[in-house]
Length: 254
Image (cartoon, rainbow, N blue to C red; front, side):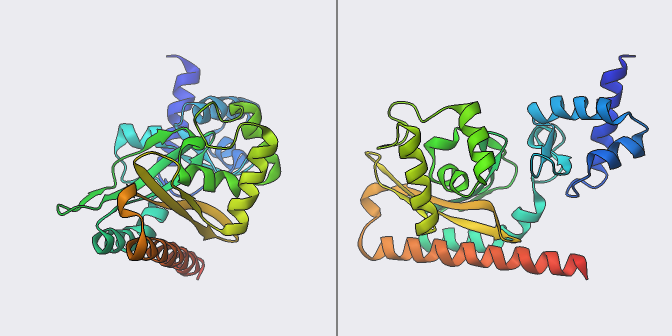
């Protein structure tokens, strides 16, 4: 038996017992009888491969998206999906447009939940797809709310937007200015693409942006009264999801 693989599977089993609860390094190592340094090295590899997730650079660990793709252990980040599902379905039905919720994991934007806004309303809670952060409105919004040190780490790891990725953003100074504008506006609206328009609003939890609510649609429909309804609906729905997350946390603490 290869010992390091056995220990990695032990960690997966341990985290899967309470998949939405973040566990600290010391707690994992102690409960599994591992040396902290050994446990940290294994978790580092598992984090890089997406089998565990980490709330912050020194935060706790929980199951990551790769584990959910393999095990189908319900939707990844069930707390967010549970809070977002009903409001998102309502918004997609009202606007007949596609709505999604995304988070930033490591250096990628990950879709947690998506509702297709057409006559045959389709709900996708089993997807965990990844996209380059710079290319999407939800990715840009999530990046804008990162703490300075995490943003710097992101830039070091991923570099700057390449040619044609983000209109008007090529240098670091331009990137910082664009992200500051997003934070000031509290939203992202992108109509720079030839055929698609998109917008995103932040979802908060404990004074931190934990997800982005996004909507995309054909550009020719994003005008006049429909544009107003899209933006107002997105903002109201993001606020509702934020409220539900807060209430869920309060119930859990009580």
